[in-house]
Amino acid sequence: QVQLVESGGGLVQPGGSLTLSCVVSGFIQDYAVIGWFRQAPGKEEREGIACFSKYDGTTYYAESGERRLAVSGDVARNTFYLQINNLKPEDTATYHCAAAVGVRTVQPRCVSLTYPYDSWGRGTQVTVSS
Image (cartoon, rainbow, N blue to C red; front, top):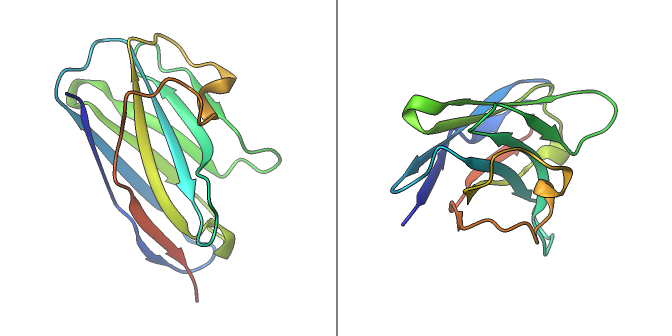
């Protein structure tokens, strides 16, 4: 069974940066897409924000305008990262990673909650406040 554990969250001032980690353990193939989602306080649903392909390193970002996100991965260690720059109070949320095992490359629908993710992490809290 695949397990995911996020870390790296905390309290950050507006304008700062943060890098979240997602460690994946258990059986995971060479092909997998790692999705990053967040759930803001008071929001019922998680919002998909970015995806990364373990197979070919392709990425997809749901954001438009200023690029503040960057996803990457250390494939050998099954550790994946989400960097968030120029943090804003509206970035306050619990951030989750998810794994779609057996999927080779990223597709735009990877930020959808209906994407066939097999496993989810419990999340790490990010609070942006002065």
